[in-house]
Length: 395
Image 1 (cartoon, rainbow, N blue to C red):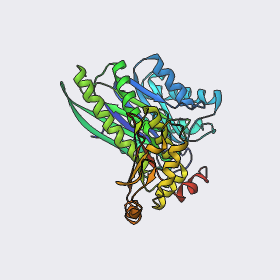
Image 2 (spheres, rainbow, N blue to C red):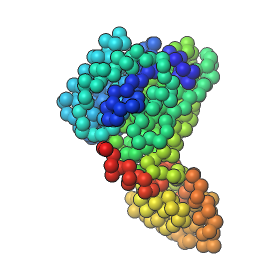
Image 3 (spheres, rainbow, N blue to C red):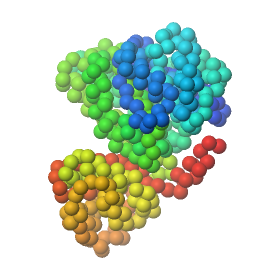
Image 4 (cartoon, rainbow, N blue to C red):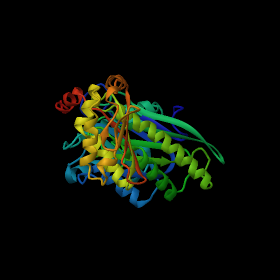
């Protein structure tokens, strides 16, 4: 077991050649102790077979011990055969690991509509089990990658009242990202001991502040899953509200760090747009504005090209569906105010803005002047490479 995984967790990978040979595309995580599970899943009605299996396990409320992840095939829109394939994988792996099938969670990513090649699974699963302990967080994350340019993971330690615990988050995702729960595939591990209801509560709140506030292309995946496993292997348990608050703050911080990586690695993206909306009548109205701006192709392409076309931003706010008075709206782009109470200002700052827009992180601040509602969102820009990647994704 490597240092960046919390105590009691081990990872292994195998090369199954689900789409392309020569790279790990199957990852396995196993805990030496039963884990308390927290999870959130896609709200897409076409939820993938692994999502359906994992939802049932979460609802049952039983401890879990393992996660198996694959890239190359999503096992989405695959009907009853897709569910039976998931159950077969659980049964095969249960024998290799000495576990019960319903202690094993599944997460998959890749092409929608293709059935698993169970012959390949049958060969690769024993390899992954034999390799347990050979991989760290980076190794497991790489086994989930598809169009990702780099692996996304982070670890940190945290001092609770009873001692030190560790957190680790591993995620994949670069396209089809506009989550309505989490985004793509993500696993969060801790060796802290925590009660199930409390763990799900802090997990849900942390995800809503981080993974639920990113967008690359406005597409919510069939497979979006985020799993949180707490095994208590550190011997340190959450003892009081102060410990719970500290764990939630640390989890939110590390999820925010990894969710930023997802946007930064948006397919073909060069920049991360940090959108802040304040002064809305409600938080919901602020969210409408932020998402309209973050998902606008005109805004995203302008930012990509370094064009300070602020009119596209206020235009998106106008069609967002939020309620506000256009005469009270203000916009600050890269620290320079360009729109104030419904009128343009600082027209002489165009050259300065153009230079600032070359930065990899771009700040967009919108003030609506209606109330105390606010919302933040991280979005990617949109460049030529996005079309190149997604017009030929299945090759």
